[in-house]
Image (tube, rainbow, N blue to C red):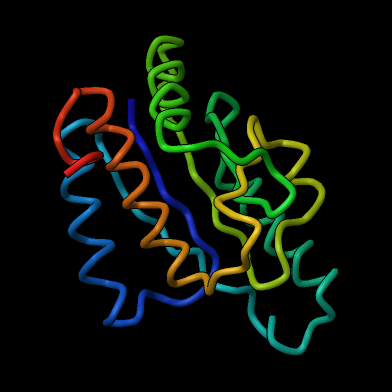
Length: 157
């Protein structure tokens, strides 16, 4: 199974980049892994939020393949703990999912068209985090889930 992390916005700030790269390398020991930063649409900063989300959604839907398993990070999504995420990853692997995509939306969230396409809506927390930190938290939690699946020490060091 290949795991892709997609995020709308700018490249990682230097204070986040090192951590994201480190956890991505670690995840790569378990699954093929890649990050894609999807740039905001041109003139996105002047568009009303609903129009911006619609344009971002169009880009995302064009990038997806029919068989991709899409997990969107969504504030109204289901909250799961680290063991639950490990179980979720194992279930996708058992189903022979070829491509698992975790999507972090733009500043105003995701368009309804993307939410409807999602296979799973996941809320990391009831708190709101900056997108840069969400990338780091997401990478760390996926790595943690991988170590749980392999009964490695990381989860309870």
